[in-house]
Length: 289
Length: 169
Ligand SMILES: Cc1cc2nc3c(=O)[nH]c(=O)nc-3n(C[C@H](O)[C@H](O)[C@H](O)COP(=O)(O)OP(=O)(O)OC[C@H]3O[C@@H](n4cnc5c(N)ncnc54)[C@H](O)[C@@H]3O)c2cc1C
Image 1 (cartoon, rainbow over the protein chains, first blue to last red):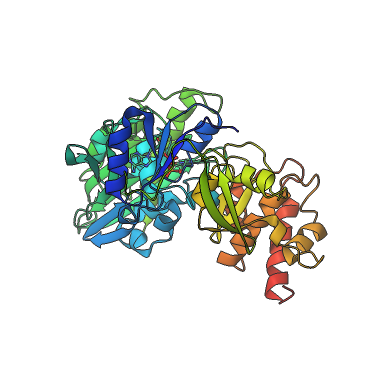
Image 2 (cartoon, protein in one colour):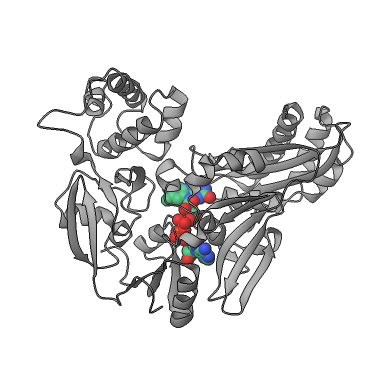
């Protein structure tokens, strides 16, 4: 057997899951799709004593439109990709989901799992920061809302405390105007974690000037990194000027000191960030909505 | 917690899984991987085990119709589900059209990765009966083959799509 032995508890609702977490303390871990946790258990990098399986907790699953989108934590990544609501109401999510692993992983992997796992090279965390999403976290002390920008604390660590769980992510409706969402990624093979990925949401006013800009980069820090200087530079500008796109790319890359590993050097990731931001802005400028 | 459907302790859990149309009931340790359940408990050794952390795709099977990794799924998670493995493809000694297409187009050499490719192809063609080369490559991106260089595999999937549409299934 590859993984260490554990006790299996199947929780068919959020209530059951919270109760199981409460009675087992820090020995217990949630099992959602298992697509990050089981590989870690197979390698014995994780050896939880109790697994609380929320994979069938129906009350945690589903996509609901409410102006924006409410996405339940155990919604499968494949369901999010296939949802017409995602494309219509948060195109950035639909664009990004194609890059999140492979069909065989997305069929089981959940939205809550990838956000809770908080891999700095994952796509959805950056997207949720770019969309100003809010996480609903439930725990023994009740329910609290955490903005995506505060949720990701560092490598594989979120603002959730022991005994808490992510129950839902809320994506607000976009700022009024002409919404331009672009997601671009460089990876070694399609479906791998990003070497660098860039999630951009721009909203143009009626005269075509940028009224709102969010640029968030994956794979270059401990958490998704917002390129605030580049965002500020864009406001009030028109997107048909590639000079601005080049400058914004430079502003996004300059403050970074990305990690280096066997796949890419720090400098490479920094250069790729500048290029992807530029390409994303050029693409956003051309997009007809 | 008392209301949880299972609260089994470290002891084994009883599961019922429909595998290739047959109902199989077993009592398994929670940590038993679905891949090991298929191979060791049910003697269905067509499902191959490569990396055992979800990367290589050799162990791909279908769970309730959807392509999935059996090495990153616990057998207990498949309780109540329908599982389909490579053994379900050939019927009465006749290869499935997808298998025929892989044979005809040099879609395999050593054959180790082939069960995963076959099941992934079956899932792809169920979703998208006439995929483009790019759609094929994207869908199969999670399956690794170290022999063929993938050209034969992509040709095999295109041929399989034709064979299935031509009603040879
Ligand atoms: C080959 C391969 C390639 C991959 N490529 C990518 C990729 O390109 N991009 C990417 O983003 N991901 C990738 N992944 C990871 C995949 O997306 C996982 O599905 C995801 O990271 C975790 O989701 P899960 O539902 O499987 O969670 P699990 O593996 O079940 O859980 C992961 C962690 O989150 C915790 N958790 C789960 N749900 C909750 C919750 N609701 N509240 C609190 N904690 C919770 C668990 O306790 C565990 O610690 C890849 C995985 C594999 C195997």
